[in-house]
Length: 115
Length: 109
Image 1 (spheres, rainbow over the protein chains, first blue to last red):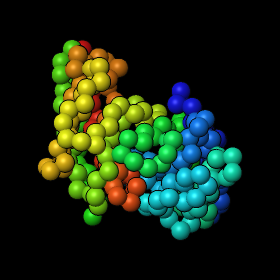
Image 2: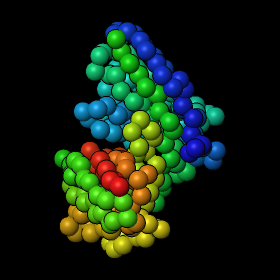
Image 3: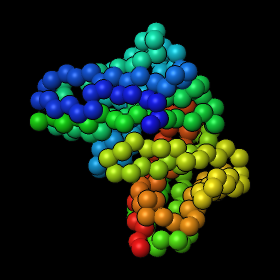
Image 4: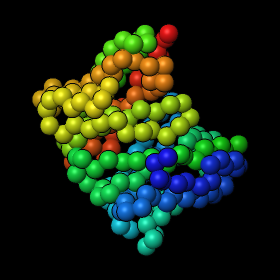
Protein backbone atom coordinates (compact mmCIF):
# COMPACT_ATOMS: atom_id res chain seq x y z
CA UNK A 1 0.00 0.00 0.00
CA UNK A 2 1.61 3.24 -1.22
CA UNK A 3 -0.58 5.53 0.88
CA UNK A 4 -2.09 7.16 -2.22
CA UNK A 5 -5.84 6.60 -2.56
CA UNK A 6 -7.97 6.87 -5.68
CA UNK A 7 -11.72 6.69 -6.15
CA UNK A 8 -13.61 5.18 -7.75
CA UNK A 9 -11.81 1.94 -8.54
CA UNK A 10 -13.95 1.27 -11.60
CA UNK A 11 -16.08 3.58 -13.70
CA UNK A 12 -18.29 2.66 -16.65
CA UNK A 13 -19.92 5.41 -18.65
CA UNK A 14 -21.10 6.31 -22.14
CA UNK A 15 -19.57 8.38 -24.91
CA UNK A 16 -20.16 12.11 -24.56
CA UNK A 17 -20.39 11.96 -20.78
CA UNK A 18 -18.25 13.66 -18.14
CA UNK A 19 -16.58 11.99 -15.16
CA UNK A 20 -14.44 13.06 -12.21
CA UNK A 21 -11.63 10.97 -10.77
CA UNK A 22 -10.37 11.70 -7.29
CA UNK A 23 -6.95 11.27 -5.70
CA UNK A 24 -5.66 11.77 -2.16
CA UNK A 25 -1.86 11.96 -1.87
CA UNK A 26 0.29 10.39 0.82
CA UNK A 27 0.41 12.33 4.05
CA UNK A 28 3.04 15.06 3.72
CA UNK A 29 3.28 14.94 -0.07
CA UNK A 30 2.65 18.26 -1.79
CA UNK A 31 2.79 17.14 -5.40
CA UNK A 32 0.25 15.14 -7.37
CA UNK A 33 0.66 13.65 -10.85
CA UNK A 34 -1.91 12.15 -13.20
CA UNK A 35 -1.17 9.43 -15.75
CA UNK A 36 -3.15 7.55 -18.36
CA UNK A 37 -2.26 3.96 -19.21
CA UNK A 38 -3.85 2.22 -22.15
CA UNK A 39 -2.84 -1.07 -23.73
CA UNK A 40 -1.40 0.45 -26.87
CA UNK A 41 0.14 3.61 -25.43
CA UNK A 42 1.89 2.68 -22.22
CA UNK A 43 2.04 5.10 -19.32
CA UNK A 44 1.42 8.69 -20.44
CA UNK A 45 2.09 11.65 -18.17
CA UNK A 46 -0.86 14.05 -18.15
CA UNK A 47 -0.28 16.80 -15.60
CA UNK A 48 1.40 17.66 -12.30
CA UNK A 49 0.30 19.94 -9.46
CA UNK A 50 2.39 21.19 -6.59
CA UNK A 51 0.73 22.73 -3.53
CA UNK A 52 -2.30 23.79 -5.53
CA UNK A 53 -0.48 25.14 -8.57
CA UNK A 54 0.04 23.52 -11.95
CA UNK A 55 3.73 22.65 -12.32
CA UNK A 56 4.09 20.55 -15.46
CA UNK A 57 1.89 19.58 -18.34
CA UNK A 58 2.26 16.51 -20.51
CA UNK A 59 0.00 14.96 -23.12
CA UNK A 60 -3.27 16.15 -21.63
CA UNK A 61 -6.19 16.70 -24.01
CA UNK A 62 -8.17 19.94 -23.91
CA UNK A 63 -11.25 17.87 -22.93
CA UNK A 64 -9.42 16.93 -19.72
CA UNK A 65 -8.73 19.23 -16.80
CA UNK A 66 -7.41 18.83 -13.29
CA UNK A 67 -7.03 20.77 -10.09
CA UNK A 68 -5.49 20.40 -6.66
CA UNK A 69 -7.45 21.66 -3.68
CA UNK A 70 -6.20 23.35 -0.47
CA UNK A 71 -6.33 20.02 1.37
CA UNK A 72 -4.02 18.72 -1.42
CA UNK A 73 -6.41 16.18 -2.87
CA UNK A 74 -6.74 16.35 -6.63
CA UNK A 75 -9.45 15.72 -9.18
CA UNK A 76 -9.14 14.87 -12.86
CA UNK A 77 -12.15 15.83 -14.96
CA UNK A 78 -12.71 14.07 -18.27
CA UNK A 79 -15.43 15.44 -20.54
CA UNK A 80 -16.99 14.63 -23.93
CA UNK A 81 -15.72 11.12 -23.41
CA UNK A 82 -14.72 9.00 -26.40
CA UNK A 83 -14.18 5.26 -26.72
CA UNK A 84 -10.44 5.87 -26.88
CA UNK A 85 -10.46 7.39 -23.40
CA UNK A 86 -10.98 3.94 -21.92
CA UNK A 87 -7.85 3.32 -19.87
CA UNK A 88 -6.37 3.01 -16.40
CA UNK A 89 -5.86 6.41 -14.81
CA UNK A 90 -3.19 6.56 -12.14
CA UNK A 91 -2.48 9.26 -9.64
CA UNK A 92 0.94 9.53 -8.00
CA UNK A 93 2.27 11.78 -5.28
CA UNK A 94 5.68 12.94 -4.13
CA UNK A 95 7.08 15.15 -1.43
CA UNK A 96 8.46 18.06 -3.42
CA UNK A 97 7.59 17.58 -7.07
CA UNK A 98 10.98 18.63 -8.27
CA UNK A 99 14.54 17.43 -8.25
CA UNK A 100 15.97 14.21 -9.56
CA UNK A 101 15.54 12.31 -6.31
CA UNK A 102 11.89 13.13 -5.75
CA UNK A 103 10.21 9.72 -5.89
CA UNK A 104 6.65 9.22 -7.03
CA UNK A 105 4.33 6.76 -5.30
CA UNK A 106 1.38 5.52 -7.32
CA UNK A 107 -2.20 4.93 -6.27
CA UNK A 108 -4.12 1.78 -7.27
CA UNK A 109 -5.69 3.47 -10.29
CA UNK A 110 -9.19 4.03 -11.66
CA UNK A 111 -10.25 1.83 -14.56
CA UNK A 112 -12.45 3.86 -16.90
CA UNK A 113 -14.55 2.09 -19.50
CA UNK A 114 -16.36 4.20 -22.08
CA UNK A 115 -19.12 2.35 -23.96
CA UNK B 1 11.52 14.91 -29.25
CA UNK B 2 11.13 12.58 -26.32
CA UNK B 3 11.93 8.93 -26.83
CA UNK B 4 12.68 6.03 -24.53
CA UNK B 5 13.40 2.55 -25.81
CA UNK B 6 13.26 -0.76 -23.96
CA UNK B 7 13.01 -4.34 -25.18
CA UNK B 8 9.38 -5.43 -25.33
CA UNK B 9 9.78 -8.82 -23.70
CA UNK B 10 12.43 -10.88 -21.94
CA UNK B 11 12.45 -14.37 -20.48
CA UNK B 12 14.77 -15.73 -17.81
CA UNK B 13 15.04 -18.69 -15.46
CA UNK B 14 14.44 -18.68 -11.73
CA UNK B 15 17.71 -18.04 -9.86
CA UNK B 16 19.38 -16.41 -12.87
CA UNK B 17 20.47 -12.81 -13.52
CA UNK B 18 18.77 -10.59 -16.10
CA UNK B 19 19.68 -7.15 -17.44
CA UNK B 20 16.98 -4.87 -18.83
CA UNK B 21 18.31 -2.03 -20.99
CA UNK B 22 16.88 1.43 -21.51
CA UNK B 23 18.04 4.12 -23.94
CA UNK B 24 16.64 7.61 -23.91
CA UNK B 25 16.57 10.88 -25.81
CA UNK B 26 14.76 13.60 -23.88
CA UNK B 27 14.62 17.36 -23.53
CA UNK B 28 17.23 17.53 -20.83
CA UNK B 29 17.87 15.09 -18.03
CA UNK B 30 16.93 15.41 -14.39
CA UNK B 31 16.99 11.82 -13.20
CA UNK B 32 16.14 8.30 -14.36
CA UNK B 33 13.73 6.03 -12.52
CA UNK B 34 12.87 2.34 -12.68
CA UNK B 35 9.46 1.02 -11.72
CA UNK B 36 8.01 -2.47 -11.46
CA UNK B 37 4.42 -3.05 -12.51
CA UNK B 38 2.48 -6.27 -12.11
CA UNK B 39 -0.43 -6.71 -14.51
CA UNK B 40 -3.42 -4.56 -13.52
CA UNK B 41 -1.59 -3.01 -10.58
CA UNK B 42 0.10 0.32 -9.90
CA UNK B 43 3.78 0.86 -10.70
CA UNK B 44 6.02 0.59 -7.66
CA UNK B 45 9.30 2.45 -7.32
CA UNK B 46 12.51 0.41 -7.59
CA UNK B 47 15.43 2.81 -8.01
CA UNK B 48 16.64 6.11 -9.34
CA UNK B 49 19.91 7.36 -10.85
CA UNK B 50 20.97 10.95 -11.28
CA UNK B 51 24.77 10.52 -11.51
CA UNK B 52 26.70 8.08 -13.67
CA UNK B 53 27.42 4.71 -12.16
CA UNK B 54 25.81 1.81 -10.39
CA UNK B 55 23.23 2.02 -7.60
CA UNK B 56 22.69 -1.22 -5.70
CA UNK B 57 19.60 -2.05 -3.69
CA UNK B 58 19.40 -5.66 -2.56
CA UNK B 59 18.73 -7.96 -5.53
CA UNK B 60 18.21 -4.95 -7.80
CA UNK B 61 20.88 -2.64 -9.25
CA UNK B 62 20.57 0.19 -11.73
CA UNK B 63 23.28 1.73 -13.88
CA UNK B 64 23.37 5.06 -15.67
CA UNK B 65 25.57 6.60 -18.37
CA UNK B 66 24.33 10.10 -19.13
CA UNK B 67 26.76 10.65 -22.00
CA UNK B 68 25.37 7.57 -23.75
CA UNK B 69 21.73 8.13 -22.79
CA UNK B 70 21.72 4.61 -21.41
CA UNK B 71 20.61 2.79 -18.30
CA UNK B 72 20.07 -0.79 -17.26
CA UNK B 73 18.29 -2.57 -14.44
CA UNK B 74 19.99 -5.71 -13.16
CA UNK B 75 17.93 -8.30 -11.31
CA UNK B 76 19.81 -11.05 -9.48
CA UNK B 77 18.63 -14.35 -8.00
CA UNK B 78 15.42 -14.14 -9.97
CA UNK B 79 12.21 -15.27 -8.29
CA UNK B 80 8.87 -16.15 -9.83
CA UNK B 81 7.34 -13.03 -8.26
CA UNK B 82 9.73 -10.90 -10.35
CA UNK B 83 7.57 -11.68 -13.40
CA UNK B 84 6.25 -8.20 -14.20
CA UNK B 85 6.73 -5.22 -16.48
CA UNK B 86 9.70 -2.97 -15.78
CA UNK B 87 9.31 0.69 -16.71
CA UNK B 88 12.15 3.09 -17.33
CA UNK B 89 11.25 6.78 -16.86
CA UNK B 90 13.21 10.00 -17.34
CA UNK B 91 12.46 13.34 -15.76
CA UNK B 92 13.34 16.17 -18.12
CA UNK B 93 14.18 19.81 -17.43
CA UNK B 94 10.52 20.74 -17.67
CA UNK B 95 9.81 18.37 -14.77
CA UNK B 96 7.86 16.16 -17.14
CA UNK B 97 8.11 12.43 -16.69
CA UNK B 98 8.57 10.38 -19.84
CA UNK B 99 7.98 6.67 -19.45
CA UNK B 100 9.30 3.97 -21.72
CA UNK B 101 6.96 1.31 -23.12
CA UNK B 102 8.03 -1.19 -20.46
CA UNK B 103 9.73 -4.57 -20.64
CA UNK B 104 7.62 -7.59 -19.80
CA UNK B 105 9.79 -10.07 -17.92
CA UNK B 106 8.73 -13.69 -17.59
CA UNK B 107 10.56 -15.81 -15.03
CA UNK B 108 10.34 -19.52 -15.73
CA UNK B 109 10.89 -22.34 -13.21
